Image 1: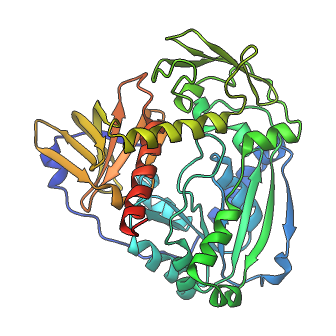
Image 2 (image 1 turned 180 degrees about the horizontal axis):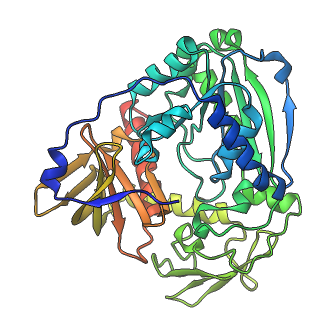
Image 3 (image 1 turned 90 degrees about the horizontal axis):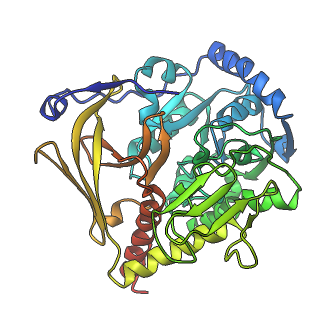
Length: 424
């Protein structure tokens, strides 16, 4: 999948008129039927099956909030298979509307800015549920998982459930991450995929529970480990490219501590500094002689998080890299405006570029996680920040594996700010 891109001067982009907000419209039943039909071949290829729990409690036309974990693009096809013929809207990132806004709205898509406060989104969801009597599908993680475990959930999610006052259904997939993990560069592997669909909370449950209790329920539902699931269920991934790009997630060597020298290629992950080599086995384990240090990808990633947190606390963490910059100010195009530098530290993000005309700052308390992606729209690895005027997509030079580290640092800086605010 690609996105429409246009080269334009920064001042010209800033002079473009702001796009007016549009309320959700009733989804096209024809388009929903067409998407469901087109999804059948891939779902058949993965031998898709679903287990439903308590779904008899939900009326056929009763609007509900469907929450789903986010592993790969197949998630959307699964959603259409499970929810059809129910009317439903889909919360999705605003860049998905570029060049196809009319189609996306007809599909029932509701745009939002990832990991940023978006009160308009809540109003649009309320409009869909109450005025249009349509359900809403939401991926509360807001981004694909890097290491196969859940990404951070917003603390405001419990409040959102209180405001919406509709049943909540959880959809969880298994096998989708193994089929198309984000780090692997859109290379599809042969795996079976299944899902569970569970009636999670009734409006009465939501009314009786506190926001903190609701958030605890949601955190439990979004606790999973796709590599562990693969190992425990004996799922084998035999493709000889299964470690391609794994360095994007496992960017720091646990043997020598060097960052940015890892190379994932074929079935191996190699440190270019100390020479240590790991093999990602068909069963999803890491092997490296008698002392692999880590045998489990999420354990390695969790160690990297601990390292980032320690660097922040000890004043060593910083990011300062050259980037190519693109901007999103409307749904007509992504505008490529030039080059600059992206910096990140205890004070948050600072982006400068376009000959000094562009300056954007985002404090750490403004974003609980980071919109970062690998091979985004087939352009390259990407980090996105934003302000009230625009979204800024930053593309580090090829081979600069900073997306995972920067997302980890964003999450840890936010948590530290929250802890300091609460006096812990």
